[in-house]
Amino acid sequence: MSASPAKTQRGIQSVEVAGRLLQALALARQPLPLVALAAAAELSSAQAHTYLVSLLRLGLIKRTPGDGHYEPGPLALRLGMARLAQEPAYRLALPQVQQLSQDTGLSVAISLPTPAGPTIVHYAHAGKPLHVNLHVGTVMALSDTATGRAYCAYVPFAAWQGVWEVQHPGVAKSQLRHFHEELDAIRKRGMERAVDLPSPGVTSLCMPLLDAQQQLLLLVTVIGSSGVIDAGWRGTVARQLRGCIEAIAATLPDTEEEAA
Image (cartoon, rainbow, N blue to C red; front, side, top):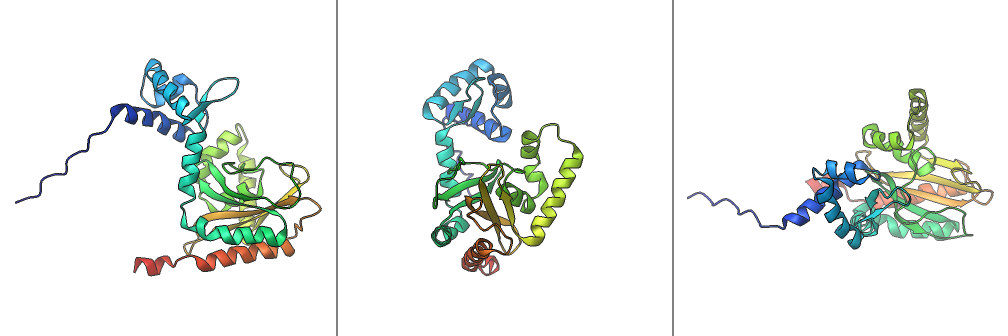
């Protein structure tokens, strides 16, 4: 006697329709006007507006100042951060990063690779206040930050091409080729830095944490005031950052052993 097919569980259609709007926003990776968002979710503008009112009340979406376009809201951010924080590499990195911040007296950020770009999931404040707006949930710019460039160096181009095009509309192909050459240099030295960029007076050094297959797990960035932080490739901070990455890597589970 053959087993009976599993019954399809009953759901709430209106919730699933609202989910289509959220999915459309996630895929767009940029704020959308009502007409475009409704079309992406295969709804009429009138239908979409009704759902959007409820999603706004819940905080799953919000509207941008000025043009009033729709984008993910604070509750969506908190849900996303909660999911990212469950990554094993993040949990293993947290105590090491906190220790690095104490040892250097500098702020240290953990960023995870996401479809939107490298996103800060932990920020340990230390040292003097910096004139830079960094916090959990900040998505780092691809070409203007050490974290963004390190991310691009270790993530396939196809994964960040869309973000690049949004951040650099109309940029010549020659500039992108030059950027790829910079990424080759980052991979060779295994570290990237930014001095007085994108914020004057702020310097950062960033290193990736890779798994056994050389896939990017996360990025650790040390941030401090220019002139205070040692930004040398072989300087004190670089050595401490490298030691932190090596300590995290030593605690990662062996994927081959787990598969066995």
